[in-house]
Image (cartoon, rainbow, N blue to C red):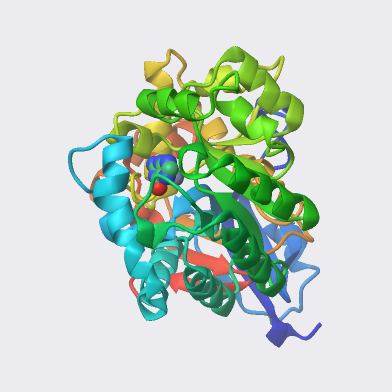
Length: 440
Ligand code: GUN
Ligand code: ZN
């Protein structure tokens, strides 16, 4: 390879090699205080101590040195987010069902207009880059054009994104409902167009049990089964009134998760948002089937939904795959650092402080594992896709001041998730290209 085609960056690096909850932090955390990462044709080719890697690179290659106050990590991964709700982030006063009707469904109707959808998709993806988020599992709206708009924009940036058309045939405004057959046909056309197109991946997206009839759930399962490698995303056990509603709509199911289970909607590459109120039996079933939960702490607090018990979900005897989600627009920040801040506080309220190491694992490799993408993204190693975030460990005056009193790397890392936000993101690399640079 010629040196013009190689990008190389230098600085402290943090990454994980496996499940830090299951295998332990000591055996999975890699911290290299002065590393070089080289990238070629979208993939990482070299990673290791700077003096070792430098010997294997062309001698006159320009290496961008971010310095000792940086921290280079795999790009953050958001396992649950609604791009059409970018325009209603921070909407006051309601809990889940009323919030959906008053704000979310009102905004989503505007996505019948593809040019509106394109505009919002652009803002959303730029906010992801500013936050250092390089992959997300994204809900579009019921309109197929909202999916085309999103994938066209994500593909133009070459970001690895998972997304799908919301399927919704009841309990929503007429302008936002489809039918089982129409949702099947539209979704299949979108799968044919977008699944594995470049870095794009399709997720079959029945919004949640209350807005899909049993007939539509059957269609969702057929789409998911007939299109290998596609994803399945929905919502689960977020709010107590929602759970009661699901019981009344599906009286023959033993609980909320069982509605999805009875329709063959659990398994690898199924990701359910929230899961705040899951029972022990339901957690066991998630573990047994490899079903993932997207923990969305800023949203769960904003809507007053409840406190997800992360430590319980990750119990060593039956660990459930858990990723982190911003759940914009019920969530209140695109920043995964701020999402970690709230993850920590929610963990405290459930009686278990979350270490900084486990938190950063969750935001990167943990979320990649929840999305079954750990062979492609979420870690820094040769062969992995070259999606990176470069943090500035002294991004504000108070962080810079407080850093003087840190005695360990873990303490410095904890500060970043407690006080840091989008200002801490210096640069974001997508497939080896720097697509975001702070202050530029
Ligand atoms: N449940 C069903 N739809 C939604 C949504 O858009 N946001 C949240 N937070 N929960 C949901
Ligand atoms: Zn959601």
